[in-house]
Image 1 (tube, protein in one colour):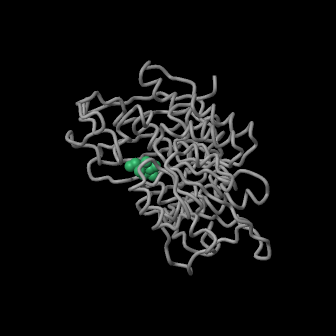
Image 2 (cartoon, protein in one colour; image 1 turned 120 degrees about the vertical axis):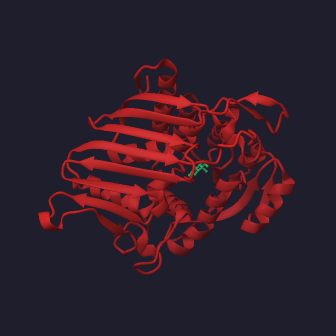
Image 3 (tube, helix red, strand yellow; image 1 turned 60 degrees about the horizontal axis):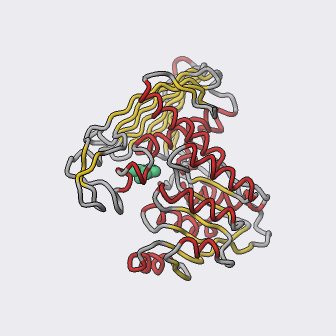
Length: 387
Ligand code: SOE
């Protein structure tokens, strides 16, 4: 996870594209990572890039970026940039990543990798052809409780896995008066986002699921767009809504286990309720983003009289990542998952590798989301594998 304290730390010059919510989480991760982890590279915030200089400037100043660019092509061409980090809306991911890889830069990209598996495939080919380190910011893998779940599963503590259940529930788009398009609302514009909750929320659930429980073979999905038309902030017209507001699917994993997944922005009262549960032959685990520092664990092998769900408080030094933070019992939060991801990326880079999830791993997720959307259209079970 990290290197030895004696190692020589080299500089890694970052060029960030985008300054929104994700631009902030990534910038914070780059700033914080060397303060807490012994990483072989120290990120340098060399340049931030976005079209709107007036909005970009205060962002760059606040985070300490040394310069700004208003054209990502210029950023990608700069000789003093080692890594391009894409934190801009989904419709920019492919173009920037292809150019960055062709220029020999390492590439990090916000999720989902592409707006479709076809876009993601081109991005995988580009980074692999260029031989550059790459990673996608599926941050929830790096919640210490979720990483612990991975360790527990890999150690075989659950035994054969029968069921996987995941949900990601929000409620922020219920109003019909909410427009689509533009800053903060591009997630509602299908041309920019690619899809609705399938690519935005289910993609997180699928990434974690395949990491914990292996590949997904087949899916049967159902989607709904509850509000069919919305005012578009960029065109000024009322336009058809092309995204899915809710998406549910059943799946069969390669290991034979059965799964159900659900994501919606219409679950009144839920802001970002990502939950997962896995049931195995011997034990089960459950996790909830709103209580992210706890992992629920039930082991049938416990003595009968004392058997029950244990609520593990994941704050001890021997829990994943926690030895780098405060003292046992003190919690960390959402932003730390990005810091962990940056730490793992830099450590892997020290060994000449890419940290997971790589672009190729993220393509596998996009194949599943594509299959879910296809199944919702055809009403058939669809393969989630590359055809
Ligand atoms: C959507 O509201 C969103 O911000 C996603 O885009 C993020 O990936 C998720 O982590 C939280 O919700």
